Amino acid sequence: MESLDLLRRAAAEATTATTTSLQHATTTEAAATPSNTIGMYATDLNGVNQSVNNLLRDVLWWCLGIMALIILVFRMMHRAKSHLRHMTGMNSNAKQQRYFQENRSSWWKVKKHLLYAPLWNKRHNREFKLSSAVNMGTLPSRWHALLLIVYLSMNVAYTLVLDYSRENKYSIVAELRGRSGVLAVCNMIALIILAGRNNPLIGWLQISFDTYNLLHRWMGRIVVLEALVHTSCWAYVQHADTGFSGVWEKLMHDPFCSYGMMGTASFVLILLTSPSPIRHAFYETFLNLHIIFAAVAIAGVWIHCDIPSLPQKPYIRAVAFLWVADRVFRMARLIWCNYSTKGWTTASIEAMPGDACRVTMHLPKKLDVKPGSHAYLRFAKLNFWESHPFSIAWVAHRPKFSPELPLNEKRMVSEEQTTDISFVIHAQTGLTRRLFDAAKVASPRVLILKAAFEGPYAGHHSLDSYGHAVLFAGSSGITHQIPYVQHLIQGYNDGTIATKKVLLVWIIRDVEHLEWVRPWMDEILRMQGRRDILTIKLFVTKPKNPKEIHSPSATVQMLPGRPNINLLLQTEVREQVGAMCVTVCGPGALQDSIREAVREVQEHGVVDFIEESFTW
Image 1 (cartoon, rainbow, N blue to C red):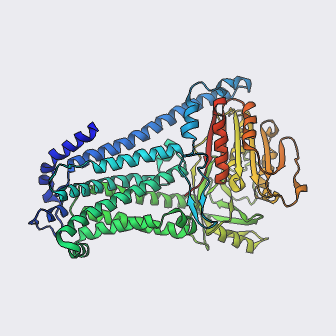
Image 2 (image 1 turned 60 degrees about the horizontal axis):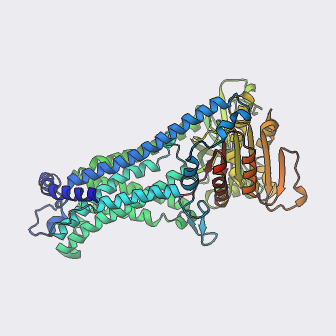
Image 3 (image 1 turned 30 degrees about the vertical axis):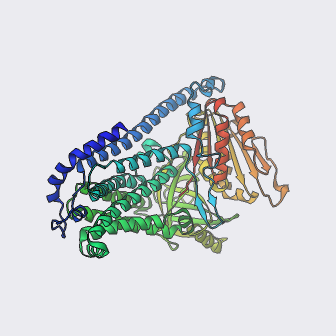
């Protein structure tokens, strides 16, 4: 409360000087000096406390910077600890890694009750659905909810730090107008940063696509609310002075007001078209409208700030630069990945059982891809302007002019190589359904299309320092886990990782879904040392023929029904080797169940949790 009182006193002391110094620099076309004590507060910076606005702007940015710095320091400490564990564990056996297995601080309590905890009870990534067609979205985690509440509270507090001692209420409304406008533009910078795919902060902070998307959505809601407050304050004072006719006159004939309203209206349209049911039911339409409305909003705010040369003009320029730069980088990345003098990327698309298709992108050049990466794909003849993120399932390099893939990299006959990157895409609605239908029509032949690959993105999480890795996959989520399995087995053979035990748990509806990944799984099962490190458990929930359920060996088991995740994970913890990492990619309900199981075993040893999801 003392800090709020200090800000209010500062606001009262600075009002007169600020208004006098800035008024002449911020006139509009209708800037004739009003003759009454109402109309003057609808124009220029009359009543706006610019010094306090600047102070709160700096405080807001400092808070954002400090939050990012804290996360960065935490990530650096985590990386240093992981590196030490990695270097030590490479030449250690299971018994020698026991030091890293045991909790040596109370950090596990923070993980259990904050970092890994859902907002309430168990539900986090499982979507709320009114019906199969109406998706209401997901709940944030407890940690994310805390961040959002703190940031929202900061914005509300900064907006309401006004000089309430003024006798003229329209002067207070004018101050609120200025404050909300400044905060809206300042938050737009963070909003655009959180929307960028090529943001270096994603790698530095190791924040997932899912988290960035969540923060972007909530930052957008804050910007829209502040823009509405800003516009409403102006309209309230203008209406009190000239009535509705005066408000309409300003909007129609004063470019300063017209473009400001254009920006606010675009923000509102973004808000109205972005609720979860609309995003999920009409994703392509939502995405295209989102880009158009965002461009119009940025243009409107730019002109609104440029006409009177408002102090916030550099900020909106920064917003526009970041927005355009990200799209330029996307296009440059897309061209670099897909174009060479020998041609453009093509895609081979095979229809698979279970409404899925296997897609292989044949890039005209070599591209290195880390496990856990995803990419955005575009397909000619379907809708080249749409791009969707998919987990990368398999990467193979081959000599540039050879029609056949080599069995391993050591058999490369030429240093000049190209890369084939494969995906499994489960048909749902929109592009994925059209893609599957087109492949099904072409079956049994493989459908060949001109396509474009944009990526890879993410791939920040390394499992190399963990002695024990447990990988869960549900349905097509197996595509996220297969590259990790291949990498860990190869690292085990080369002696470059600490991992000594890997369990892959894949939950599928029917045995026919094994066809999705059969060629890659066959190659993994042929890898040297696979039996020493890898155990695979396949759970078939609804087999058409129970006789198909059989276990080929002790290290590859096929079981009917759903797994008892709590029991399975407790068993792994009892046999834990060094630090353990549990990862999951699959439906929201599966992720929530595994999250709960990981929280339950936190006190028994070092068990980290990583989930991969594309909620939007």
